[in-house]
Length: 179
Image (cartoon, rainbow, N blue to C red):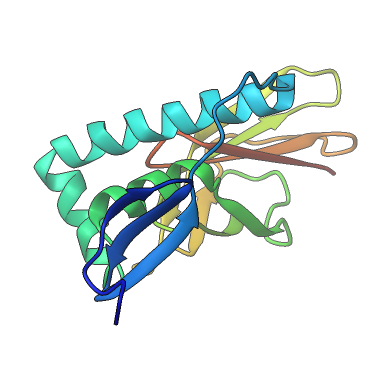
C-alpha cells in the first residue's frame, strides 16, 4: 500500500510501475566495464537486429507479415528482431529421386521461425565443376521445397549437392551431401 503508484528513485532504490504493480530494484551501478570480444560482437549483432527490425516495420507489407505472426502482447518489431537472430533450419534433404537425369527431383524440408524466403540447389561434379544451379519451388505451406533438375549428369560418383536456405532478414543456412 505504501509504494502503490510510486515511481522514481529513493537513495539506491528505483521504483517503477508495470502492469499495475510497483517494481522495486537496485539502481544500476555506474562504472568502467571492459567487455570481451564475444560480448562486443553480441552487442554489434543486437544493434544490427534492431536496425533490421526498424527497417522491416518501415515497409508496410513486411510489417503486416510480422504483425500477423505476432503473439498477443508482441509487436511486429519484436517478431522481426527475433527473426533476425534465427536462421532457417534444414530438417532433411531427400536425394532418393535424383539419378542424374533432367526432370529428376530433389526434396528439401525446411522451416524458419517466420518464413523461408528461398531454397537454392547447386549440383557439382567430383572435380568441382558446376553441373547446374537453381531455385527450388515450395508447397503451399512453405515446408517442402522441390528442385527439378534441368541437366543430365552422367556420373554421380563423388558429386556434391549443396542446399542454401535463406529467410527474410537474409540469414543463410548451408548444407551439402556427397553422392
